[in-house]
Length: 257
Image (tube, rainbow, N blue to C red):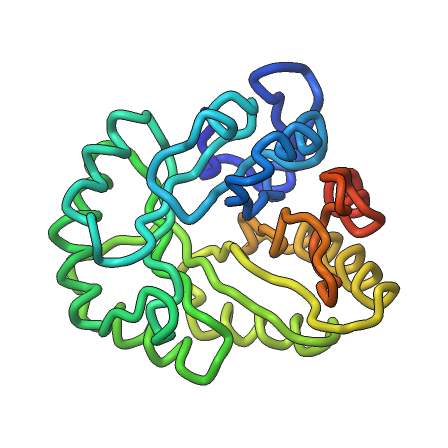
């Protein structure tokens, strides 16, 4: 396991080989039907993976790619610290899109209370804490500001964020605006994708976006959404119908900056 606190654009050696991966580049992958697909991400630029869960399933634990646990919502939060300690994880992710009713849907004050009681104690064990990841909807940054205001005894090592939209300009504007509002912390973009329905536009977006994210010292990590097989009408999935990298996947897995 490596500590992302000391890494930015620098590379690291994966456990199972000497290939130098990009310390920032991660995967969002939770396809229990096609678990073997993770093998195509080994010996690529990808260095970490998460699946919105607290414990690495065997297909991720055995992949040689660093697994990062997440406390998705309020349910089971009382068990999170023990699970993290048992796994030896050095970095964790907080609540997933708590500003959205269809996601973890937690009020800022409630989230702050849960964090203080159940997640903050991990800091004493040297675990890096990623704050809750809000959406880029209008509800996102206000929720996060209220959460931080309520969480007076909390410390965060970085703040994750999510972004979906069309065009590099809006994406860059958003992450810079977010950085300006929460300048005390480095950021991780733990979900992002172009919503364009033009395949070439999506590929160009990904190629330019990851190069740009790699160049920013206040971006510690990022994960494209998502490492799934191609579905009809989906232009942002990284794999084809057989679980092999499509053109977009080849860009994300292999492009160096």
